[in-house]
Amino acid sequence: MQIIENKGLLLRLKNPEKVTAVIPKSKLLDDGSLLVKWGLEEAQVLKNLRIKNVPSPIEAHYEWPGLYKPFDHQKKTASFLTLHRKAFCFNEQGTGKTSSVIWAADYLMNIGIIKRVLVICPLSIMQSAWQNDLFKFAMHRTCTVAHSYSREKRIEAIGGGSEFVIINFDGTEIVFDALEAADFDLVVVDECNALKNPSTKRWKTINKLIKPKTWLWMLTGTPAAQSPVDAYGLAKLVNPSGVPKFSGAFKDMVMQRVTQFKWIPRPRSEQIVHQVLQPAIRFTKEECLDLPDITYTTREVPLTAQQKKYYKMIKQQMMATAAGEEITAVNAAATLNKLLQLSCGAVYSDTGEVVAFDAKNRLDTLKEVIEEASHKVLVFVAYTHAIHIVSEELTKAGVTNDIINGKVPAGKRNDIFNKFQTDHDPQVLIIQPQAAAHGVTLTAANVVVWWGPITSTEIYLQANARTHRAGQRNPVTVVHLQGSDVEKKIYTMLSGNIDIHSRLVDLYKNIDPDD
Image 1 (cartoon, rainbow, N blue to C red):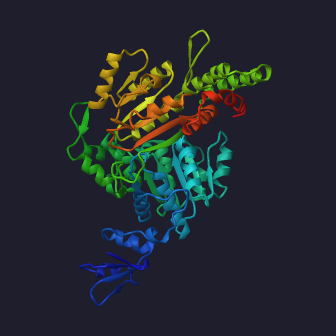
Image 2: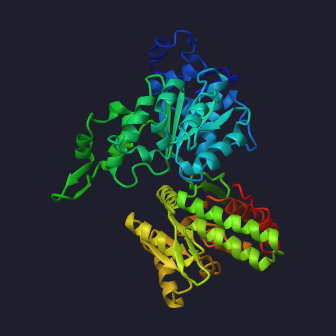
Image 3: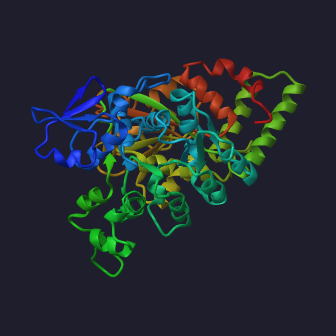
């Protein structure tokens, strides 16, 4: 296949009549080759005829706007998406799926194929990933986040006419009528494993939004990672003709019963899952040779109602103290530390007692990140009690994990590190940063999660270097979990290599009491 002056495609086919029958304006030349206009509709038809390597005109007729130029794999992903009304993108975490989708959608808007996009995603990435990336890569487009404690505010956001509307999964049920009335041309579902079960209200709600003419792109880096059965709900949305009408029949296809209560995957289950989850594109980090060695990303984790109540109380005490006496670095550090502890789920009282708080949002987001990871994961947690909260929750979820903190003897630490590097389990190490920030190689992991920030830039950088060092074969992703204003400010300082200790008093005085 040859591209002619960025306007036409020159094809050499054994049976050119199969193309001329459906693309009447195609022209058969004297030498037997076929010239076809290089438009999106024509490219889609050629793709449907199973002609290989058909390029999307986005590759020639798009300027790729934004603060950063696309990597080659991002261009290929955007090209693939524009050729498929319904499709999967299974690119691994950290490969830039979000920007690929934004560019593809922007191109379809430019040529008048679509007008409005609904992005459905976890609460933790509505702003930190989608809204921020829309500003970076399509700042000329309007965008609204439809998230509020008020149903009316959400409906107002949806009806406001923004070209991109971002909403969380549970929000779709709350304002379904408004979403249906808005008649979105393209629906993007990020972390679509949340729709693996078609019997849930969430799945049924989103299924009702998908009309015959609706474009639907579903994203996840880990399709059907837990069980082959999980592919059914995803395929039912994108490729309904490729799976049986009922989930039980699909389960029989991919699983076999060995006891009354135990099922195991059938030998061909992987091939069946691959077949039903089509059309799909996938790039692993290993394949993306143009990626940087290390990327940083943020997940927003709203404080729970209980955390918010006590967080506000502590800040009010801060303001009263600031008004009545001189603030020193010592008392600024102590109070800021209380806010960080509360954000992470456990506060130490002045008498040394531990007061635990509801940290469900943060725990749920952590499990999402671990599920998306292609390799092992390090989770850095500064506070001892929070470490145990995380470990217990991961164990309940079936995620094998070990703990490294100051109480673990050196000999045992080495055993845990060696096992992590060489064995299948544990999948996750939960580490107190000071206990393993130096000299340890943990390259079996390529995802680093910060449960909350710390105030030492040196330890932060050293901790990230446990995975990003000689012997690492995969690009590394560092994930910041943040839910409070003080966390956001400290992460910003860490990312800028700013000495936080020298600015504790300023940081203390600049915490907004209304945030």
